[in-house]
Length: 102
Image 1 (cartoon, rainbow, N blue to C red):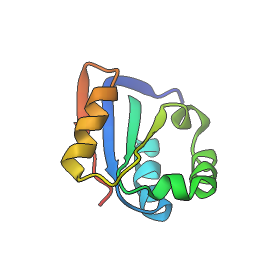
Image 2: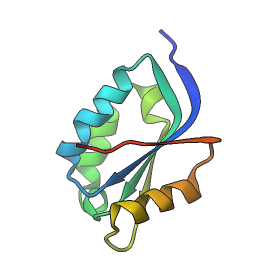
Image 3: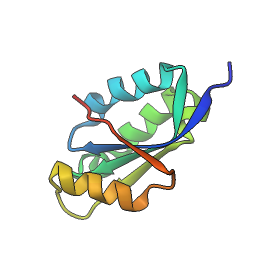
Image 4: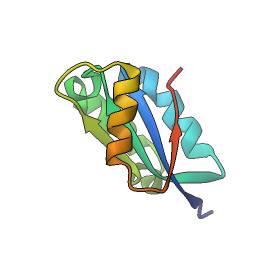
């Protein structure tokens, strides 16, 4: 079944491990509609340091869903508000949704 892509950029400030991020990605993937893009702001340098685990996680998702995910690596640790602002600057859609891992 083809999922409808909504004109929304979903922004996830992420200061967590790949294992903590996985349930969120699977839940979003199973929804009836997807955002047009999912921006994961790596605010704690966790995904960069575990890029192999992250790549495996993306491969386990629906291929079309994995194609809307973008990781925005940071060169320093960010507070959640700073990470959200960074995501907003990179967002391509007219609407923004903030999603937290927990």
